[in-house]
Length: 367
Image (tube, rainbow, N blue to C red; front, side, top):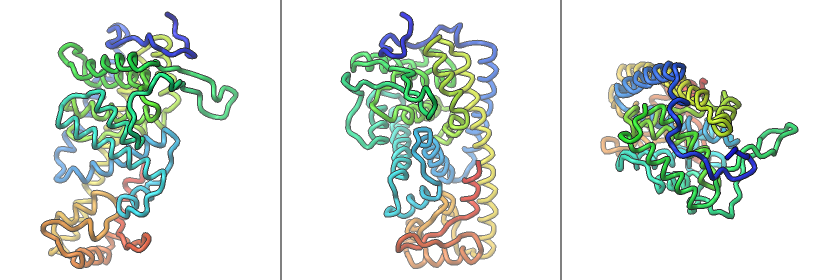
């Protein structure tokens, strides 16, 4: 049957797609480049003494960029402050932080269980949207409309499948395709591109499908052992090339043209890997310089305290406390001493004094 954008796409083809539409010379070249960059990123991240320094900051940047795609805007400064002082959290920052929590919830499930399930996708969706429902019911007449302010703004560009049974059948097929590497023996990054399209085409939830789909892509790389932790953030690439993203998605839907879409996603993985490699190296060099300064001038402050300054830009005395540092007054003294060295800048948020690692903040704010 020909595709009609105004009718539910209940005959959305199941996976896998025909190989002749997927495996081309151009795709294989892009695949090789993406796998090479991703392997370098995994190796470099594995050498970090404390990966939480990177995971927290990268995950937050992904959360911010992913929600920006949905036109939910907040500044990085607001986000970092929200992580440090709970009373500072505003509406948009809450949305971004829920995305980050959803990412970690999905990551924990993949690490513990190894496979995706419909239930794991529903949990991610519920965390993002702060709701208790699941797959959208048939009375929810979801359609995708063209955004913007032009003449065609509001025009229907896609109508996803409708009906819980049909949606669950499509999801079951998608999840089997992702999980079963014997039956569906594809390179994991090819699976990433194809499964991302399929999830967005199924559009199983009332809202938040884009964000759930981007988390699914990140977690797929963890599931397939391409990454140990979710440190690759694709959303900024999509923001910069949003028009192509929707054009190539539509090419698959309307003409089953996979090549441009797969190459787009492979290029996203390659370029984002290179960006993240550079960011890791910059953060690592800054950490080494900061640690050396502290060791020279403040030898009583342990390395673990300095590491905590790099988990996120703002630090409070409470965040320094652990089994080796139990005194809040000592934590405050350490922060003041590092302020005197020019490492930290104090800032008052409400009634609290927090300390900003200004050099880390500037590094993370660079595009």
